[in-house]
Image (cartoon, rainbow, N blue to C red; front, side, top):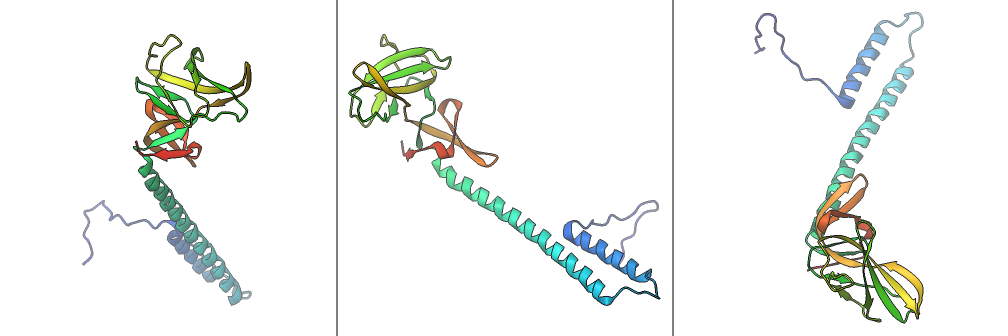
Length: 213
């Protein structure tokens, strides 16, 4: 039974979208073209066939593009699902560290010719707040977060660098890899960004190691 509408009202019809709408429009145009063609010079049937084939190819391309877009979105979600397993682990990176009173595990990489190592610590304003000797040949080092006088530094963001020295000569200065907990993984355009303690953001491809705390 047809729906009954009150005077002055019309029944809303769903609108066709995408390729289906274009296909309907094409058929209407084709029908109009056939109805208004010159009877003395009709359009060849092969021309109609070519037009239909052309539109069919375009329609298939549109559907293919939609399918590829859907697959790309699924792959993106899959990548995020895999990265969710990183949250809660500790990542090793050369980014700044956030000191909140807890010791920070470092993995300094000295120059092969060095005979002594010095750890430089600068605060967020770039001011040097500490210099301390790092044992040569140690694969790891625990930074306790103290200044030159041995007093604990205030909570905040710090940059660590390692001087590889030969006698009194600095032969190389490198950022120091440190471990920090991963609090969040987020997508920024085409890049995955990991948020570490203290709001420090690092790209996922800069992580050189993961470990369970």
